[in-house]
Image (cartoon, rainbow, N blue to C red):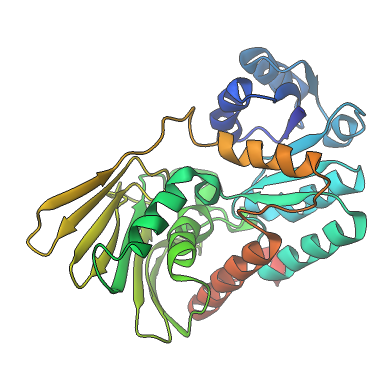
Length: 323
């Protein structure tokens, strides 16, 4: 399947080498507003064509799937542009800037019959199911709490600090923590409590978020842009606990009993990078004539964006485009 990349942000540089190595994928085209930049990227990663216009690239009849790698604030606009040209689209997280946009994209996908999915890579990875199977086995007994954190030293990057780009920690890395909780504890959140420290530009720098569930379970999440964290996700059970190393791309799952003894380690399958799974599923679903993902259906993307909106409302964080 001929794949194109729209927008050449840092995530595009990370994903492109995986597309090259993904079975069934062909690196066809890239587009940036600067043609010379697109040409340099295409040469570096082995894409056949380079365009200095998104519209021009989307007019290429050979393209079958477009990966959107622009800032959060432009995701909805660029997904719609792809679908208007009949191109299936896989969009980097966060899916959109807010839930309203996510709903619009889902409706437009229904109207056009064109595939649209969020590239929330952890939803597609085999590790997702290995974690869930371990929880379901009852090895640590009833689980009462989940704790998870994700933070990096990245406060000098404009995409993180610029409110016009829908910047802030929440949409960039906080989305992973909330997604981790929703993947394993579900969407039925009864209450959200949060605290936040804002940047001088008015977006969230670091935050603590607690998701409460009707059955008493809690997910306690922390995210930040000032320092690197250990990125662990831990499930706390009556008989022990499960540690997931790196909720952003799990590399180990370890089970401990109530005396802190390691009693099981679940191996993670070898992978190219982890990005390949979202492309493999997208190609399979598009070939089957479907318009959304099984691993990250549009309803889940909408639900996730609704939670992000709810949290931002607690902070009074409104992006300029929303005013």
